[in-house]
Image 1 (cartoon, rainbow, N blue to C red):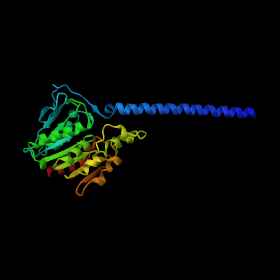
Image 2: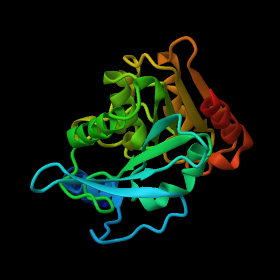
Image 3: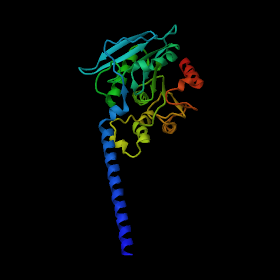
Image 4: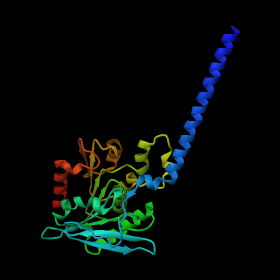
Length: 282
């Protein structure tokens, strides 16, 4: 009996030590992951492709390549795509997503220019030919600079603010402080922490991120009509996340659900291209 008792006691002790060991390993991995998220979050969240200053864009659409020195370190690069219609009736301020640079998003330009709209698209700090350190405040400041540039030639009721993915928070913030004809958001998020928390629920992401981009707060202060496009199969910004914005919309705003659409293929669906055409004809 004593031998059996000793055996089971030893076995239990070994199991406890093993469990304790694995708990320490898990805790260590958790801490390392948290440190990496905090200090390397720019590399995790943003995926810019830099271009040399003398790079020549080969867009088929008529355009102007513009660089605006902000200070000694920061230069904002943007491309002004011209209307391909017989008249120019307004301008679209297009704020793109977190990948690559303007070149990656230029394929969407004809959807706007064919309806008589110019398109101003900026590259964020560190993207394309833009230089400087990326911060949330700088995203807002540069968006405002683009608006002021557009407003020198177009009245507010001829300016459409368009945001795609990461750019939706920037677009919403700008529209909350400046008048415009309409706001169009493609695959928007409630706020940045809620997107990251979906993938890393074990971390207190809200307190760890340097970027908040609270679209939910900004939309409450937007007086212009708002149209949202969101796919049900979006694996980057989930439909559940984007749908949280729906109760914040005012009378006349639209939340358009695109069944089966993912994060980067909404324009393959006729209802999206058709709806955008109808909005730009107004």
